[in-house]
Amino acid sequence: MMDGFAIDYISNTEPIDEAFLAQYQLFIQLDYPPYGWTQKAQTAFINYIEQGKGGWIGFHHASLLGEFDGYPMWDWFSKFMGGIRYKDYIATFATATVKVEDPNHPVMKGLPATFEIEREEWYTYDKSPRPNVHVLATVDESTYKPDSELKMGGDHPVIWSNEKVKARNVYIFMGHRAEHFQNPAFTQLFHNAILWAAHQ
Image (cartoon, rainbow, N blue to C red; front, side, top):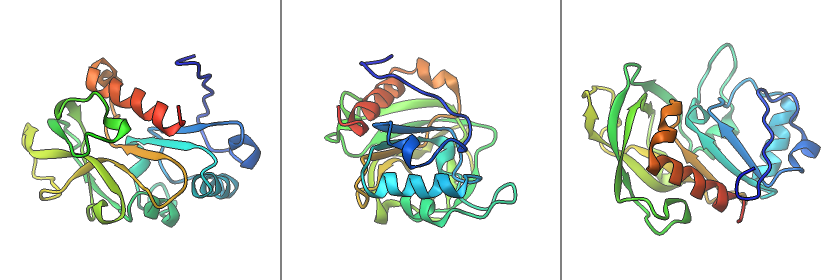
């Protein structure tokens, strides 16, 4: 229990259908990719998001969009994530500064204007999702420690919301390492996202 919430965990998409999702105010896709979902789960999830039946928070692997493990890219999910396709990642990890872009959004409440995320495997995409989503924060690629050649070239959103669907939703790229929960900015971000997406 947290803030009066009860939490259920699943580790694959087999249980997901309309009746399953109807039980929940909020669906947290915690580091789970958008491929290999059952057809039933895809259909139910699309309806849940498009009809605003509950909120959604996606972390990290939720933007692993492309062909992986023999599965095709889920085109609807790519569009939901701003029309992007995964390109590459910093496999050796880099520490970097995240810059808040919309301090007035409830998800960013109480966060400093910039905060550091240690040792993350920053993804790059084929393009910025910015034209199709509301960007809440970006990573400053010039702050990568150690530096990396894998960059988006300036505009690199890492937290955003798709306001074209009815469900309250936020994607938070950071989340590869459990150690992020020792970072007060990250835990504040997670807490804010849960309350906002669940209409609390």
